Image (cartoon, rainbow, N blue to C red):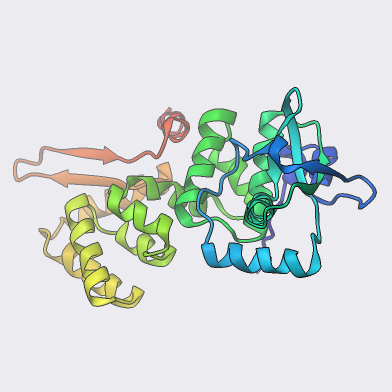
Length: 278
């Protein structure tokens, strides 16, 4: 099987000149007052583990900065972070007045893409931060799911599943942000149809410490409680899902009347489905 890597097709999405900003030459940096720098609005990472920050701060205290942070000018003598947010917070926690910095001329799109590259390469994003970053690519920069898949070096199904995390109840999404729930556990919850059932199973995970395999077993048990579906309807449902590349539910009543429910994850996905229906 071909090994997928982050950044497959990256040149088509970010100019090579911009990609190079994350591989700076040591001759390019300058020391900038920390007071002139602020967190970037396009930073996909919202949560920083206090233990990780403490370890990084100690490392900087003992060894100094191994790599400068990357910033862009926003107005006057104010700059915002493109890459290196943790180093910035570590510098502030140590009470440092200056930090080694590289200033780059970047537009909003390149700033956001480069910030995502850095965080995904370091595996710094929690599942919800990743989903939110992908949603911003779709909503603000008109990326398709295909574009995102090429960008991160994964298949479109993976991208769709990450975006599906938005469909989970808010308390479950918060658990993903805080690390209380793992990506694998959340993905298993998506197999349960209703938010009520998802929440109930989520509570069982917290109270009983269920493994992914145990969650899968209980999710299947929930599905079995539903009325057995006509084989013909099941076949139609499967065909529609393969055709449209999304989850489809077909419900058939005794009088052979019913409804078809087609899920979409954002407006871009809706447009894709409409084109398929053509």
